[in-house]
Image (cartoon, rainbow, N blue to C red; front, side, top):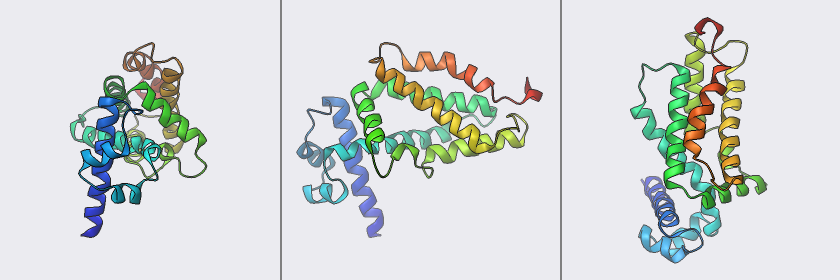
Length: 198
């Protein structure tokens, strides 16, 4: 039972932090604001996080919560490519509409500089487990090409999404991430369609 309670405390801190980052900006949000919003204590905050910067790595948790919700709404009748397009669209729509470019840039830069754990690359994330399931099932029913392994397709897809996010940040968000991805991702994924499906 204490484990669940500790997970709830950490989850409340993360949820409060991202709510505040969105509402008032990263620079304007203090640890005290996060502690107040999460209804926890400074001791609890520092038990889980070294400081405010450490929360940037938890954006991967925010993304995974989105993926968990999307699993419930995804049409099981879609083929593998359509499922991947759906996930991409929904995540990028969330980023476009609710995550500031400043926060995303900070997250991506922390991942580049991190010497230890790189949250975005954690293969145990919901993101990777869900993608692996979709790709495996797509290969099993002959929707995806067989001359690439599941892990090769998974790596290429994850790399594609990160590349789009990095470029969007580099360009200062001068274009709609979701609109650009909606146009380009189907073309990228088409190269993984099984020749039998063409």
